[in-house]
Image (cartoon, rainbow over all chains, first blue to last red):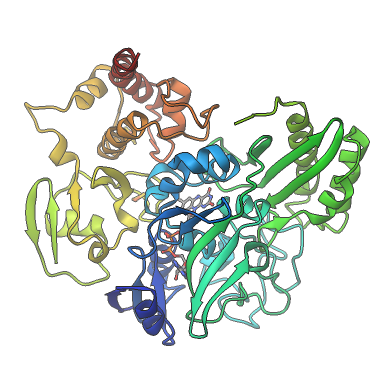
Length: 330
Length: 175
Ligand SMILES: Cc1cc2nc3c(=O)[nH]c(=O)nc-3n(C[C@H](O)[C@H](O)[C@H](O)COP(=O)(O)OP(=O)(O)OC[C@H]3O[C@@H](n4cnc5c(N)ncnc54)[C@H](O)[C@@H]3O)c2cc1C
Ligand code: FES
Ligand code: FES
């Protein structure tokens, strides 16, 4: 680890004042940042500890919930309001990492965690995220865990968060405090696709501080499920995950939410599949067609072609089991 | 910097780069918590902070100032074993023992999470008030602690035996 100064922020304004300085980084639970610093992939000269800021979960006037960026992943998943009104979010968080890591990890840090691509972690490999213009060793390398949607020749890494996949399906908004004052960014617009600049991972300006995530009132809690497919049944990142929510009117799809994890450089809201289903009769053919609509642009690499079929099957199976499931009325 | 470690006030000057695990082992010579991977992937370094389990290898000691830290040395001692330590011996919950301090710290926190009714990924009803201590729940909740010797069956037996009766008693009390 390269040397750094440590300071604990007293409030958001103080954090931003310290955080906008080039070389400074915010510290949440440290479960990603400390690891990357130890590998000298991140080399901040100042850590601004924001883990003690924004630690509450509050009702919003319109009946939603606002979750502070400093709340731990474990506390979000254990919150009774989240479990009752946003079960998709609780499940997604509980599917991720381990109890120990969820106790440390914060909401803000989870959103801005970096990819687990092995070449990003290996300083001896070429990686356009670490050294823009260097090339990407994953494109022709071991790429079983890599992206099938929205990738570019410059980068095929995935965003590893489970929590963000649920937030994408739930239409969550992210509150950001920056040099230019506070603003709201929809979670599905926060992360970028890699394009030619995979080192720029979000639309946030340097020094921007995430202070909260807001969930709108409708948590699609009556029929929703987070399904995660991985190499072992726990404590592993997703190969493919699906956050799905369904609202039915008889046999017709009134509303549907679908987001995918493990497949792209960002949590992937499956808008094409949703559009293909909304207002339609929920038949097998409609489900297959919706999955096809989303996945027809998908491209496999040497080791991850299987993910395209896997994603198709998990989408179809998740939605058809939700359609058959008894509605949970609360 | 100052912490409470196993009930005692500790005051040390350390580099800000020092992990909580290195503080415990290298500075304070508390060798219970182990360094398995140093990247959050094995759980051998698990300790309790204010009663909650964390991986001390990913924790910067500086960030945990003022907090109450408990390691395996604070849970039991030769001659005064923690009930879980006894259960591990009885059920062959270890072979080499390298993962055991982490397993036991982790399990102590798991028990309090269960008492609080916190769900896991395998909990069918997320809104249930109480959760049964089944082997399936225990396996999922303990998945952050790997065991190279594969003593998992003994570990699960030790934990279900120790905590399932307590959970049953809690339920009877509630009813
Ligand atoms: C072994 C292991 C297994 C894992 N498995 C999974 C898994 O299966 N699924 C999954 O989803 N995740 C998994 N994770 C990742 C884990 O969820 C993340 O490391 C964690 O969520 C990051 O949160 P943190 O608070 O520790 O972030 P930190 O490490 O503190 O920070 C991460 C990044 O976010 C920035 N940051 C932090 N807070 C803010 C803020 N408020 N505003 C702006 N920037 C901020 C930091 O500067 C840093 O760049 C795993 C991690 C490990 C180590
Ligand atoms: S040493 Fe900390 S998790 Fe492996
Ligand atoms: S007993 Fe040897 S690693 Fe678990």
